Image 1 (cartoon, rainbow over the protein chains, first blue to last red):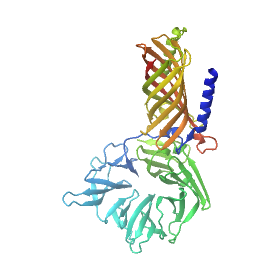
Image 2: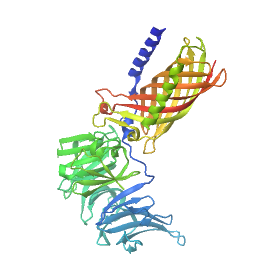
Image 3: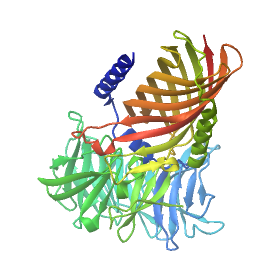
Image 4: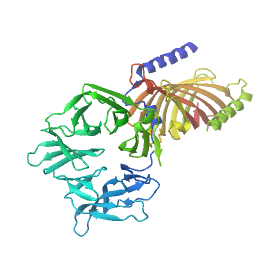
Length: 347
Length: 199
């Protein structure tokens, strides 16, 4: 009897060892649980930046807040929904979509708040702009056929040819615009800078949908990311601001290592590294030249915990410190001077 | 938390010592049908291939108190040993409020050294596999549990007990896997009520 039980147990253990397998996990399940960030019952849209008093501003789905204040600076209501915001110095800019019961029309406006930390913040309407749709956190404003930038509290037109905006991504002071030129009906990939300059990166019929865009290096070079539908890997394209428009972009001889999804990215300038947040890892990308690229995944140190979080955006804070805005766990500070340091939550 | 559980285990063991005198109530061929339900305390994750992560315990597992329920059916192979199977469902939430479910399907061996007719002290070992699911991840893992269950029988057939012990699940990645350093053993500590029907 005892022999039979022992045999059964040994057989059971052998079978389990053989059939135990990871069916779908992108990271270890227990690793993912242990790395989870707390749910703060919020939906963060964007981290906006820090003012001179050290208050970190962020936009939630119900309004704009800053650290140390529990009520919204600007509340998003059913009649006046906050659809975009940016912080430039101490001035907060807010894009709102309002619905008028009288005219049954929806209008989008931008206002500035000179002192958003005041007890009763005062909003001043900024005139201009046609068919406004989107405000990026770096102050670039997009209409359905025109692009603008905020300059000293006024809205200025880049003067681009009329286009139909497909989508836009931002990286530091730049925005990548995918647009269809109204005159030629061609899809153009254009980069605009929030100081008023712009540049066409790619002027060709191109059916690719880019999912990420990152400025890197000191010479205004860019990485563009898209997912190759045939091999499912993420392809990185290289482009440079100020170059002649081209019909194809140079492709890096490496793709993201741990990407099921491209989530967010930033550039660690001190270490000449682009860092991309994938599903459960951060990929560190070092580019010496197009053929010489190393991609190293990391989910410890600066990536601990936040590697499993859904990230809204990442912005530089000061020195080589960055603020990571997570969708449901608010803000974390990471220090890229030491990759082994864990992220610190900001309350 | 750790102290409470250890104390509870100690009290249960000490309580059983005076009545360890051999006496049997069950016969070969008797059967036990158990339904149990209760809570599970997250105990530890041991990332044994990753010294940087090491072992995290209790609240550092970033899991919350969970729940468990199971049914088990066993038959006695002699007066003190019963063997059978158990189907269980356990859940815990991570601090991201995402549910992790564990569904162990196990063979169960129970030794009942103390059996007076109205009181049983049972010690069980479960071995099998568990389907684990969390977020987008799924895994079928080896599973083992050891439990101790003092039960009081209010009639010839029906008894109610309290059970505690340790449930362990292993998420194993081999050396050639890129998730080798994510290999882990997870421990949960259940405290459950057990309703037993014996026949």
